[in-house]
Image (cartoon, rainbow over all chains, first blue to last red):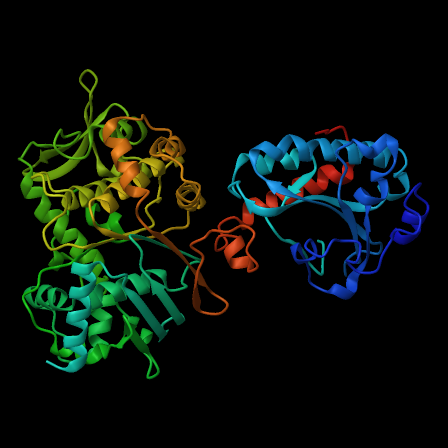
Length: 158
Length: 406
């Protein structure tokens, strides 16, 4: 199953898979740097798609997912990206979003749960963490990558 | 005196008296294809080994102190017989003549410098303006006592030989059985306490005489502890003591903020052998040098040093107060340290990345982790490992579908 097929098989996301980075808002696209833009298989704006549903409307929802075909993988990988201010006051918000995403992937989003993935917090503005800091390691223990302001997707995932 | 030489002298005077930011451009000198560095009150050079950080700093020393260097060589009987390439071998160390190429170009504050001509013609009595603490500083105390300039053969870089000579001269300030640390009039009390705790726990640094030969020893402050010679010191103590003595040289006890005539301080790889807590203390002492008006240049491979600079830059941007800066270093908020923090927050720090692939320098002073360019966002490679480690763990957790829950 491709990521596009998985999105179409997911309740409330059918037809929401878009080419390249078109699911991202214009201001969000510069935060994503793919080594080969042709390897981007598509993207989906989960946040907008689920915002109108009563059960998710008030939740801290995750932003979007990007599909990427790495040279060293047979199947697509999904980069689950949250663009968010990076400072102490926002840690709980982003972790709440990740909790929501993981619950959703266990339920309605289970078709997408099968893909190899990264959960990535990309800073929308300045990053007020030192990149060597313990926060980054604490996030990693929760499966979360903090990349600073740019997510760089390499050719090979390794 | 040629135009180039006189222009350089004028430039150095302007830099010195008006505190104009010195701007050095170097092309095709050793591994440096193109360096473009504007020095701040504190300038930090980062980058992989053998990318030209030390060479650039030694070159700056040569430009700043040409007459003094020639005088020191003259006193030591070093004769390069007017051959510029031979001079490079004795100044930078044996075999380093290869740094120079026909296409080498050097500019200081936009003026082209003819280095061979400067080396040949420069003559004045101007005293040394830059104090250089080299990465190989441990050599200066190899035998437990600083050796004279002449003790080293011509294969050893000038900066090492001169540093050793300066420490040797400094020793005359202390008596035959003197205590070098802790000493009341040397360093702030807060620094002494921090150094005692983090580098010399339970020890004093003293001069001892063994079979008529003076030597430095660590003596236990407890009971009847014996004297520990250099050979049994910890690696951190061996690295730090020459640095401490260099700091003593710079922080004259007579009440003057700086040693007369000295404007610049270079400290290479300040972190060598030191625990992170000790690195924090050394960083604070470098801040003290900066607050005293020295223009400080350091090279480092320590992510912690950049963490400190990053914090300083961000705290300044956000209008933070001196106590915020002291919290970074986990030190008491005493009046002297608060005053130091206040001074430091007025100063400008610059950070340059020496990129091996391009042979160029990049100004990464903003330490912006959101920067477009990977060299800047990765702080010149110093956060690469941490980033890879975090990514590997995050990825493993994300794909294990295990129990870890935020």
